[in-house]
Image (cartoon, rainbow, N blue to C red; front, side, top):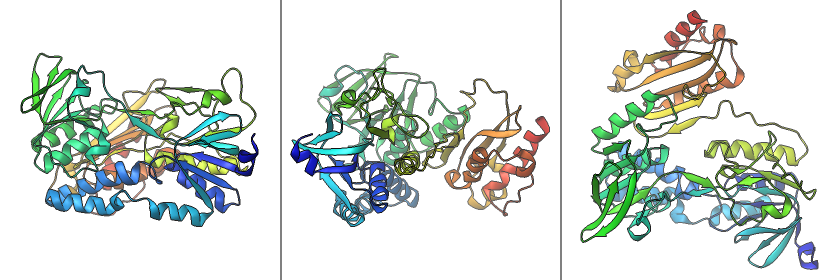
Length: 446
């Protein structure tokens, strides 16, 4: 290590200021010297380019606000992309914020914009980045990723959304609600294709009611500019004319050019950094250099959600401080904040290999709360492992599902016996009452 790097040596260097921000602050408060390296905005994607602006716009759409008012509210919530307050919080916690892109140049040393920083523990929390689909000519036409879609003031008249996952569905609903002519293109036969079929089917119906055109089971093949905008050609021979394409075709862990190969960390460009249950980075066959390397958030490829990243951050903090803690991913929620909202947790019925599932469901229209809300859309399904008699998965679509499904996440995580769950009393009138007949039916099947 050079003398300069020795002078700038820290107990912990954290690459990435999203979930890494939490890690850096907690470790600094615990007495460690910590440097947080961030090349964009301190706080990561969520507060500026993802969770907060999208949920704010969805809320404005539900309230029936104008686009101009919604954008003003969004920009206020995201602080007009100003991270100075968050950086100041880091400084108050004792964290040294280093602006720039960090790269490991040799064991125990990270370089940022030509300056070297030494470390004992390295935490990689660099997040993920949008994937551009292999569509001929797509680089020659006007496109957005979710970053631009959630920060720009523009309201395209005709918008194509590529991708029927959570991001594509949320953005489709946002722009359709405010008047854009939205066409969503998804190669799978339904939205949210990895989840229980009724989730995507219900959400598709909701989007169509808002005026969105869904092209399911077809792929984009080529794009070209036209005199009035652009034209996207599809695999079924049809085409769509629009003013802009919004790319929401997935994300990949941000692992390129981090120098991880120099310290023997095992990673894959598509799946991210391999970690064990303590979030310690797995070594390559050649092993590591002896330093401790940890990873948290999207860069691990485990669960691409902010709440999962924050959970992994807490696991990393405990282990860096010598308090062993293992992550358990059995009950990480998967939510889509549309109206109605979608929530899934635990095992999906489409990926339940090795388990003998028993399932039961209930339509929310049968609840008194549906009458109160004047909205009968939605359904909840619960999945139990016949051998153990406990819940292992659940799926729901309905108003506020991300709120009232939390007790099911707890039941899955705690492996609460069905005999206890069937004895739980829910307040009247709530959507949670829908669980009671479902749980009784499951108990009768076991």
